[in-house]
Image (tube, rainbow, N blue to C red; front, top):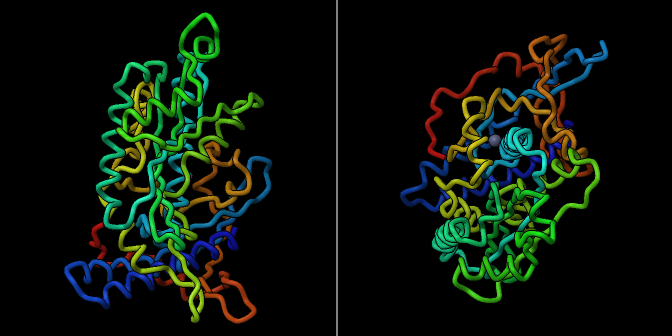
Length: 357
Ligand SMILES: [Zn+2]
């Protein structure tokens, strides 16, 4: 749990250094970049290891961060948000499934040609419009609802960006997979539909129908595929003579292209179900707040079933608190968290917390 968090914190610190480099360059965003760097450094710097009762009368441990920056560039905050969204999407699907048990889902990936950084933002706008066209086409009528997530990867070799959508598509299984109806779509059909919507030929489309096994497992695994990070460390990190750093130019391009954009969107019955649940979690917003303060179990990376753990009835009962603080990697020692009693006195958000996201 701490090791996963420390590894994410290491990426988070590299991004903070990149924002400082961007601030050093000056320009109209310099002040905001400097504030972002400070927020990233503070995020999950101090943690509490909390002992709470488990369901069997024993004790289990959780991690609680003192401060969550909630920035899109932060691997810790994004992991927490992704977990919340995964749990929420599972809730939304369960609500829709309760109304119609013949629902089945499909994992679709819709890509466009790679672009240079200067074209990333306009390309994402074009993708959003294309997706809207696709959703409103006759061919889409077999899709009862969808969850769409944007991911952007970067190639350091080619120096270009690869934006694409991961989609969770819900169909009526008894119709979609039956020869009696005309609902079924081959890979070629999906490809043609996306090409027509994006108005470009030769696009790569990947459509998978998860093999039937335990449906909760498939749901969790598919959601995990769909709800990847908007971007990952490998996308923005480069090896230099001084070690691995986050490439400030890539960070800036991603930041400017994706800020104020909705990265996840529901349609159809999933949007209806989402609206019904929206009072509970507002994850559909452009920059949704996280419940709690980074109070997240980190284990679900290893176990897809943990993507939407049941609410913890004992969440408020805290048996013991051990404060720890991030320790950057040194020669021979990986990044880690170590015991630190100073954290007991700094359990507050920064006063001047007005950085735009
Ligand atoms: Zn953060």
